[in-house]
Image (cartoon, rainbow, N blue to C red; front, side, top):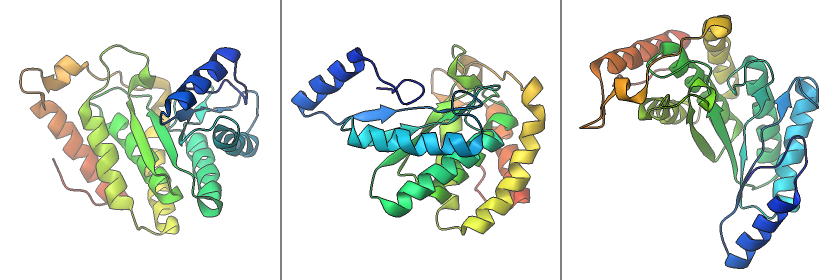
Length: 232
């Protein structure tokens, strides 16, 4: 379940937690602090983010916390500022605790676009380098448009995490500086992409040649930024 913004919860949430604990369930608590909202700027939102993660375990008895700092203007987790917030908050807790920390993915661009895959790659690198145990995605098109999410975005998320594992943080930063700059300039006119039914053969549940070409183009772009992946 989710905390409410910021650092709040209601009685229905507490009732659900009590029921799950009585059942012996594994509890995952999420919270998405808003950059530019109640907390303010990057530093303040990062402090809020750490506090929400600690509260999930200390107050709400969760087993896993699912993060996701969100940009108040763009409604995504892949902006430069929200990546910085998520990275610093997770790195701080990863260094000082053994808590299980996840992050969720909300891109601005839709499926079957290079921008969507590059956004996903940037966050996956960030999460891997900062010590996340779980990555959850991808909610393309900000997760608000019907049929606008596919398995190819999740593939990119996983492949990038594997490639970034073990990289030095400074090396990751060098790649991210190039990568984020490629897509953030298009935030005001992000491509909507295609619906699942246009991205996949729904009979075989395999991606179309068009999406495979888009994916491989994104892989080549990542290579020019300094991260090598295998083409599809």
